[in-house]
Length: 490
Image (cartoon, rainbow, N blue to C red; front, side):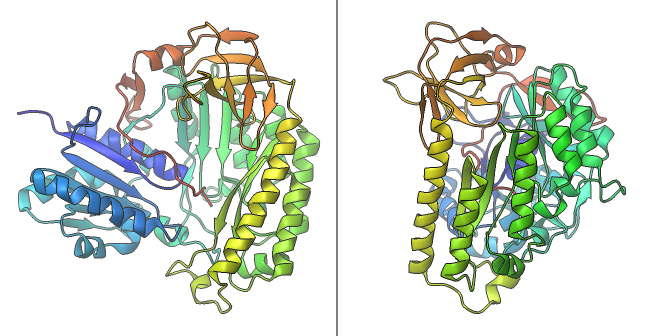
């Protein structure tokens, strides 16, 4: 009997990407193998997002494209998980009867059993839990990268933002113990991973379950004691919980990168109040000032929503003022979309598409102006890059490779004659700044081959068995056909 193959398609935020790594680990533990190249998998898993309005269109568009393959291969199974599955539940099978399994955000560990049950019973299986069954980090994971890893510090969210559906789909915040987080980080580093991103819907409230409001700053400092861990990032904080001890930990811990993603959403105090974002413009900008005082080189990114119900032209101008004052290196910008189940969906004064589009374009223009000025100021500066795979080569003519600077900026660089692998570390000098990236066309100042680069070259990825269940063991990469989508962890 041949080994059944799988493919995981991911939509949405970094949390979904890491959940997909766990889904791949679960399937491989159950005896599945990633599908080769353009082959037809026996199981396709769609890990969905529900934050934006087009999430529904993406899901049902993908399901429509899969239907002919399912008809041609009756043994194929299609599973739908993630936030949209948690929201729509049995409606997915009603709208797409060729779906075999629907599972929610709280029971991703049940996927192999549900697939087997659907085959045995020859009918769709829908299983949605209302609360967390097993903390996801105890599940196996097939990591997508040999050099960079996601590590969850918490799941769920205790905030009540009126535009956001995440708390109702991910549940209340559940925190991992610091020792479990550090054990997972240490296990990844032991296998060659040199960069870790700590994940949570709101990392600044980490510790609420065990009564330590300074827990996240302590966790960052503890990561600084892990030998071989070169870069630590985190996403996303919430301004209402941002404390000075976290800024100090960032500034004083050498391997914590001077990069901060802090969602603004709006620069208008009136709109922030309507959004139930419990901070105001002055508080937000004071955090930015404190970060820059401690780390003048910090790159700060954000999320901004345009066209929230009742937003006036004056409100929007306040947002533009904050963008100019904060000098964000980049911003994830969204047009407000009505999400059923959120308080904002029933608010009066929903704005017209034309008004929202106009403001969206103006916001992008201002942010690009700010980003370009900041990137031009970096010309002639020396940067250390972790060579990456996600962005690939910039173009076939220049044969530039890509890497991420310590502040998170994307840099396309000329590798020269050196054989450089993703996971290696290089130093180079910036020669050009564009709005969304930097270019370094000169000779490399240095090139350090890393164990992570060796592992990438050999096609190996760390496979974690879950904290307390064993250290990572290497294997081939999992099949994830789509990268992170447009939404950030809010």
